[in-house]
Length: 368
Image (cartoon, rainbow, N blue to C red; front, side, top):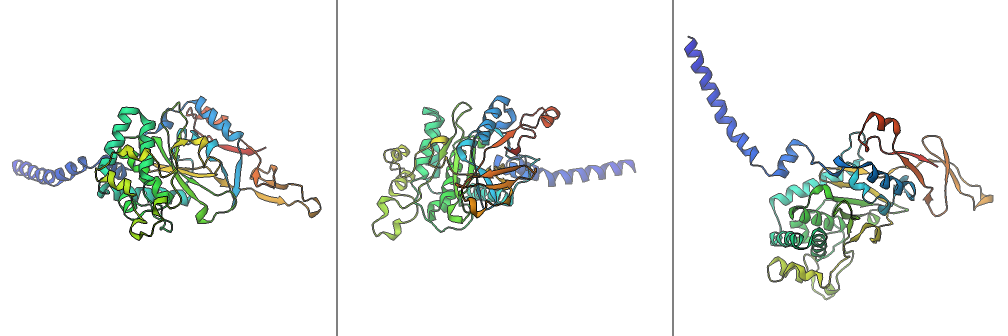
C-alpha cells in the first residue's frame, strides 16, 4: 500500500511538471519589456542615487522661479524644473497621480505594446544607425540624429487622443505627442536607458484648450550636462506645398530613401526639417508651464490647485493686485500679468530625519 501511494504521488508530480514547464519556459523567453509589464516592477532610475546637492540646486530653481496659473492650476516653467525631473522618482507612493497623468502613461504603454508587435518598414535601419552614431560620437550626437530623423515625418493635425506607435505614425503622420513617442521609442530601441528619457506635457499660460497643450521629449545625456529638449515641427514642410495629396502624410522623400537604404541616416542633418535638439533652458518651450513628466514607468505632476481668491481689488484701485489665500491660510497676491509670486519649496526636516532618502517628503510648498 505505501508503495502504491508513492507511485501515485510520483505520477501526479510528473503530470504537473509536464504541464507547468512549458509555461515557465515561455515566461523566461518573454522580452524584458513584457516581463516588466507582467511583474509591474519599474526599472531603477537616477533618483535611486540622487544626491542632496543636486536636489538642492533643483529646489532653488523652483524657489526663485515663476509659477503660472491657468484654469485653477499652478505650474512651474519647464526650464526651472530642469534636471529635477530626473532626480525625483516618477512613481512616488506618497503622491496620488492625476487622472490625466495616469491616462498618458497608459497610452504610452499601449503604443509600446503595439510597437513590439509591428515596426515600420526600415525601422531597424534607423535604430542601427542611431546606435552607431552613439558608439562613434557619443550620446548627444545620437540624440541629435534621432530627433532629425523623426522630424522628417510630416506633421498632420486633427489626430485622435491616442499615442501612435511608429508604424501608425509613419503611415498616417501625427501631432506633437506622436513625434515625441516615436523619438522615445527610437532612442529606447537604440539602447538608451528609459530612466534618462522623459515625455513632458506642457500647458498653456492662460487657458486650457486642447490646441494649446504640447508634448515634447526631454533626454538626460549625463549627470553633468543640461537635459536636451527634442521638439517637433508644427507646420507643413516647404516641399509639401505642391498639389500632391499623396505626399501630405507620412515620411518625407528623404526619410523614405533612408528607410529603404538608399541614403545614410545622417543625410537628414544637412537641412533638418524641424527644430534642432537644444539644451532645455534654450529651447523654444523653456518658458512654457510644465504639468506632467512621464515615461512607461510612471508619472510625476508638477502642478497643483491654485488657491482661492479671498477678495478682488476694488474698482477704485484697479492697479492693486488681487489678494489670495492658500490652503495654509496665508495671504498672498498675483500681479496683473497672471504671474503668481515666487514660492518657497523646501525639504520637510521632520520627514528628512525620519527618512534618510533626500527625496522623501520633498515638496512642501508655502506661499511667501
